[in-house]
Image (cartoon, rainbow, N blue to C red; front, side):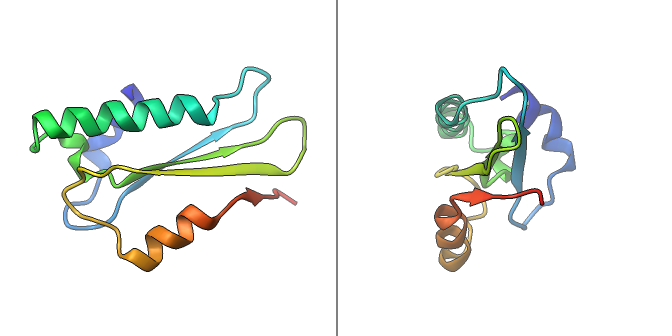
Amino acid sequence: MNVARKKAAQLITDSPNILVIHSSSLYCIEDSDVLTAAHILDDELDRDASAAVGLLNGLLLMSEWRGAKGRVFFFQLKNARVHLPVPVQQMLENIRDWSAG
């Protein structure tokens, strides 16, 4: 969440903005951590629609561990000021894994 708030100044008005998080360490970020962050940011936007993170549409976690095929998790912010087009949202939700090679 703190990273999302720090990046808020880099978000583009009237455009979709997605924060991509890549985690590959032994103590990697779990998808449940990112889901929790998305809920907290959504709650923040529910309380204050003008919050800077309101330009953020979602969080995309790319997780890998020891060279194994990476997993992808997308969490849309429901209270974002600009909503993703439905085809883009569906595409992001359907990505399941990735490979660096």
